[in-house]
Length: 93
Image (cartoon, rainbow, N blue to C red; front, side):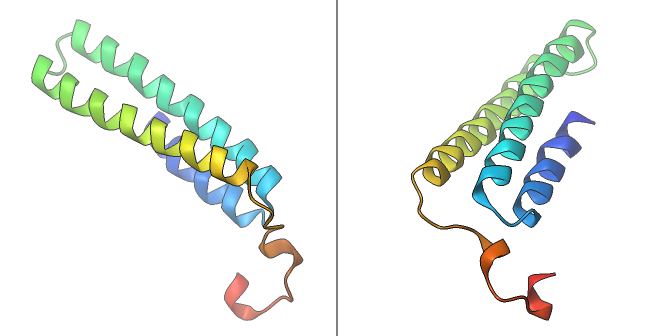
């Protein structure tokens, strides 16, 4: 479920239409990536996955977490107000 939470929170935050809320939801998403790391340790300890599968998936999770962090930092330094402040169009849905 945590993996679904990562992408779902990114999507929800983006659709909120402003960087402050987007950053908030990105933070939740980053937290969910930490949850995935914990679940990977449990899966490895219970022998649901191999050490190789753990290493590969853990590495991918670290990369995703890093990308989310960099996006948060980029948004913090941006002057863009967000789509919420543009004229509404059918394409903004």
